Length: 239
Image (tube, rainbow, N blue to C red; front, top):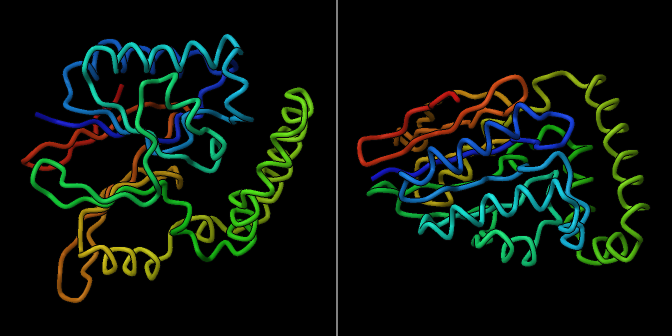
């Protein structure tokens, strides 16, 4: 028995290779798993569940739905790119929408799941934007606009974000040790699995004398993969 974790796929019609790898994951790999967890940023952007009629969006949702129909539980956590993916998207996928953070017993190991952006506390500018983007009133205002206007607005926001990143030291956009340790302490010194930073690795944090494992999931820019976890531990797997 094993479970599969992915994040930061950033799927878009402009990157067909990543999309094909995702279809391979859900049709050939994940059916043998006990569960699939998608920890945010499945899409390059998501402008609302009413955009599910878009052929590309529908193809991704239906592929996940086919996996769920085969009896593999799928859990989805919002990321910063798909924070507006809600109940409508989850229903179409046959998936369970899980909060960030989520704690579970994973094959006998207490495990904390996060997207990871809340751990990047040194990036003050991003954290302020995150508060804005998660505000329900701001989300309602955005979703009240026509789909075309939302898409244009999001494209502009992405361009501003990419410009801002170029002026920031790389370390600012990574997690801070203090935020990681506080989360591990708050949730009982579990194993931590997250994405967001695009820095796939395994880390060990000693918190209050306890060794805690932290896995950072790979992004799917120029590569693709998942984390396989079972009773004996976790292993990164390339696609």
